[in-house]
Length: 561
Image (cartoon, rainbow, N blue to C red; front, side, top):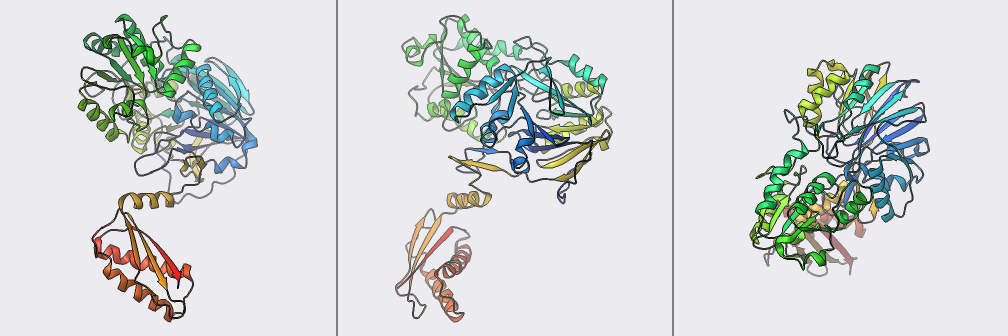
């Protein structure tokens, strides 16, 4: 199993008939999936998603893959394949198309409809190429074939990439539900056919590689959902991802069977379900869906609301209901059905959400106390099946944190893929497929690119460090009026303190620190205000840490008297 080495250098030139594979996101994390393939001087991109920020990244909206490695070669990009319509696979597309708007965007009908809506907000008109399972089309030196896979959003595709260097099969996000609600099963016959022909590199979804056995079927949720509708005395409020068409279909069907009307709440939910209904992916009985204001006039036991916010996102509908900041007032007798899992990193937010909803008297039904969610990803049993069907020469696990990638790599080895043909790569690691063997050859830059309000890449790790310091340690502004002649304090300094120790005389000893620092500066002939400020910042910071074991942000302002 070849691991990426921290000391990896810039990759060498790609051999004439080689295929280069670089994950710019999604390797070592769940999110911002983006893989770039390079062959004969042309580039093919598969997916371009976003990662949602965690608590240690305050003020950040989303995190993008780093495009710097391909930025000066965007003219060589022959296409951008989108495997399915989830944010962690399509959320970064507007930012890539801002840099070159006419990249052909290749995807299935629903995926392209969702990206078209998203791009409207960015005022970008894309060049869309619709494909369906079974289609085979060349884009430059890449001969692409699309295969059906099932996932927690309809119309997912795996992509076979034939090149003169060999054939790649990229699963996208997938599972092997044998009884999917739309009857569209993962095309294992297609996987096998490609396997017979020879798959030189297999990129497989690692999300559930640590989970033994098989992922439960979507239809096995029906009894638990039915139970909620049979026993709920008043309103039912369902929270789900705004893209989980099948889950929402089950909720609509069960609502209809129990004589309830349904309203969608939350901008992304209203938009996505409108698209899904228009294209026929969501089948809605006549008169079932009503606007929210109409639903509120109905008796409580006749109402179902479907809303966003299953991850505890503070601005989404469910969190606002829990915080009493929404026109829908959750109360005694309401049932909340949280029909989704916790995305890693969101567990605390979701737990807080459940507590707040319970406080108002609602009953909360969630994955922890009922069978109301199944994953969209293949478990270990399904992955092993795939390895045995495809019999790949080389394997590169994708879409997962380190532990998921490692578990998936081990599954491949267990099915007989030689250890030195299994590559674990993290973001930016360059893997070349040359003469049938995939190996790590170098590393390119692939940092986090932060979107902060309207700016892309303006916020850096240093910005976030300052923000965390402000949040956790506070800020002290020191105003020092210095006599230009003597270099000494003309007046006692002022300390303006926010979020730090508020004892009236806490800063008395700091005056001495300031006097000593100014005396040293005068002795060394330093009179420049900016240099003085840097010296004061350092010395007051050291004093604050010694005195209080805290490291506030120190902002000195030196003014000449």
